[in-house]
Image (cartoon, rainbow, N blue to C red; front, side):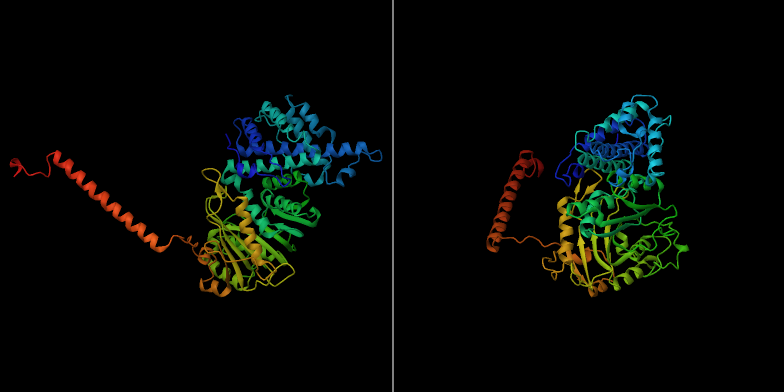
Amino acid sequence: MIPAPSKTNAGRASSKGANLGFEDRLWAAADKLRGNMEPSDYKHVALGLIFLKYISDSFEARHAQLVADELADEEDPDYYLEKNIFWVPKEARWSLLQARAKQPTIGKDIDKAMLAIESRNESLKGVLPKEYARPSLNKVMLGELIDLVSGIGMDEEADRSSDILGRVYEYFLGGFAGSEGKRGGEFYTPRSVVRLLVEMLGPSKGRIYDPCCGSGGMFVQSEKFVEEHGGHIGDIAIYGQESNYTTWRLAKMNLAVRGIDADIRWNNEGTFHKDELPDMKADFILANPPFNISDWGGDRLKEDVRWSYGIPPPKNANYAWLQHIHHHLAPNGIAGVVLANGSMSSAQSGEGEIRKAMIEADIVDCMIALPGQLFYTTQIPACLWFLTRGKRPTHDYRDRQGEMLFIDARQLGELVDRTHRELTDEDISRIANTYHAWRSSEDGDGYVDEPGFCRSASLDEVRKHEHVLTPGRYVGAPLQEEDAEPFEDKMRGLVDELLRYQADGARLDAAIKENLELLGFGKQTNDNR
């Protein structure tokens, strides 16, 4: 059985203040229906149905509005497109599928529904799963899963129902990533890490880009950030690319379930070798590239325009990702990138020289060491790089030229099971607020170095550390709590304790001697002279 995803995130309050608390029960119920299916196969069955339920519910809600409007034509697709709602043909609507859930042909019915939706919605072409009719898929299980999904959000108003379905989809994505381990985790960045990146960068207006977008979690959290801070979804434009076709499909559905309009490209040649967005200059870049990729084909890209700070080694793509991302930043853009810890200190194959060039160019804004066990893909601790093109003073930020912020967050987070840790809401706020205070326009007011946690270091200091960016080198050890007990009282207590130990020792020696004598040892007699 697949373990339920962590309740730490699942059970927390949504942005609207409600604690849904039912996702884990829904997950457990869906898992019981899985039978002998592998999570990697079952993932598309379950997520595809949740997606179908979402777009059908959205369509039906809009349809009801149009029926009530005497001047509108409820069968005109344009009335749906103007609200960013997919057109759902009659044969693909959830109510019909639910009515046929117990029929032996339900698999074929779902496949036809998926094809019908794709035929009427250009942006979904090739995205939806269409393997429900395959003989290996238990049709009884499929019918029961339809009944289970039918209950999601059915007692809620339209907008709330859509939000619940989006929450469930996101929850299931995390669950499948955990159950598949390394293979599944490659498409999914843990939610707490994504939330930290988004809270640090605060994407509110402009272009957001992810060159290796996985299942699209960065974009979902960015949209949530805009909503929660009183912005308008139309204030941001989302762009991304993904090389894995299956993962790209998940991303497209994940964003569609949220009603997020985004330009996400499937790029089977990979971001390095076929940059689908070569002229992109993004205001915010959030990325979790695969760690330490050794077969990225770097030997074929030695003259690439993106390598402003040095040619990345052909056996490790870490510094190729960093330079690709910086290349795509707008003049005042900022990026948050997840990488393996080794990227902060590695000197092999020229990586140390590239890092030195980046530091001397003053494009590194902040470095964060994360705790271990955050990721499904690896137990190796990771770090966050924050790159920028603009440290000069602006309306929002102070002059940070020649400075870098180091945060050591290795002791934060809490275990949610034996193998996985998550950053808590408090952890995320503490880290993000520290960064915001440090770079604020008020001359750094509100920021103070905290030994063991954070430190603002000068470029000269980083040079003294030979351009190594490991936060532990800069933040030092945490201060020990000061003992309020007067020195004289403390010494008197220590002396009393020592005398007590001596008295106890003397009594113990006497007891041992007495017992030995009872046994005939240690006492002089005529027999043992």
